[in-house]
Image (tube, rainbow, N blue to C red; front, side, top):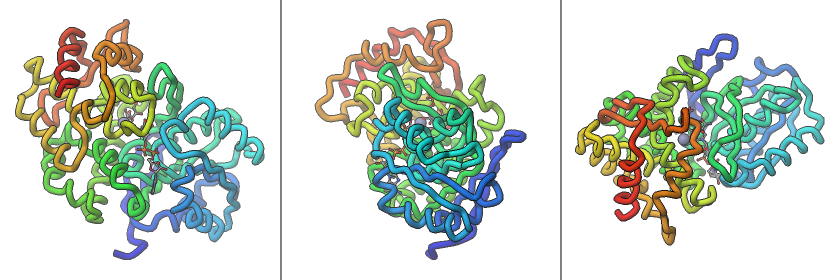
Length: 374
Ligand SMILES: NC(=O)c1ccc[n+]([C@@H]2O[C@H](COP(=O)([O-])OP(=O)(O)OC[C@H]3O[C@@H](n4cnc5c(N)ncnc54)[C@H](O)[C@@H]3O)[C@@H](O)[C@H]2O)c1
Ligand SMILES: O=C(O)C(=O)C[C@@H](O)[C@H](O)[C@H](O)COP(=O)(O)O
Ligand SMILES: [Zn+2]
């Protein structure tokens, strides 16, 4: 497979804030060419993390320079804890020290952490500057770089401070995945599965045949999975940018998952995608328990995630004593809480997710006890 090939384009239709997602191999080395027509100034500030910088910063930087675009760089620590107020302050301070102007464009080179943080900084710096997403994890290529949810975590919960702020362009270079650790690749795959579970049993069935290839590096399968996921997300975001209705479906597995992540202190014990994998199983188990979905669909989901080594129960996290009441307390701070009631995303089966579902918390507690004991 060559370093560069023809990119596929998915459009996010949001009126004057519409933008393209380009998916292809070698796009980082062509970033200047694609970004140039969108820039208000021949200057960008690239924000990345230390791991990504090692592998991809030089190539991206050169791609801009070769297109006559001046670059400056900010390298932050890697990991979920970088999505914090402290790092937001650090980033904004460094952007101001570099004399960022309103016409300067920020470029987020990295996974969801860098994308969410940089996007949020872009939305508040000088009351808003443009930004471009260059996602380098599978998770970021299929989910976080698309749709404009930006933000940081708080001790009180995930992503509780943030904004809806759309990028001008997304460049998903599938070659970036060659350097991504397998654990991160698997975690990102959980968000791919989510699209099948929401409204496409056909995609879920396709994934059952291609998951191993996607993880092992089958380029065609990876690309198809990324494009299909981006199309699905673009459709939902285009119809409901600010999550007043169907966008909540993209939160499938997250009510549980975010609670697990918060309990782990946003540490490497449990990655976001791993928490979502467990959370999606919980959502399907709860749906089955309530008689809403066939037990077989919950079992099929569990089998599929386990087949590529994703966790399906919280007991997968070593040495942690989960307490159901504490998890429910975390869920009480979810953004889908309305009039004090937690709105869950549940399903009538694979490809048939729905929201909101207000559930007796005694049922949720029982489900959690069973899941913790598994
Ligand atoms: N905004 C949204 O819509 C949205 C959607 C899904 C997830 N998220 C957020 O995304 C975050 C998780 O993102 P993530 O899974 O990408 O994690 P991440 O950004 O922490 O990246 C994972 C790890 O991989 C490293 N890495 C990234 N790209 C690499 C590459 N190409 N080669 C080698 N190493 C590389 C990073 O340095 C990091 O250590 C969470 O905070 C989650 O809440 C946001
Ligand atoms: O884009 C969305 O909408 C999502 O919900 C995508 C999720 O995968 C993502 O993790 C998101 O950040 C969670 O949203 P939140 O509003 O619950 O923080
Ligand atoms: Zn997510």
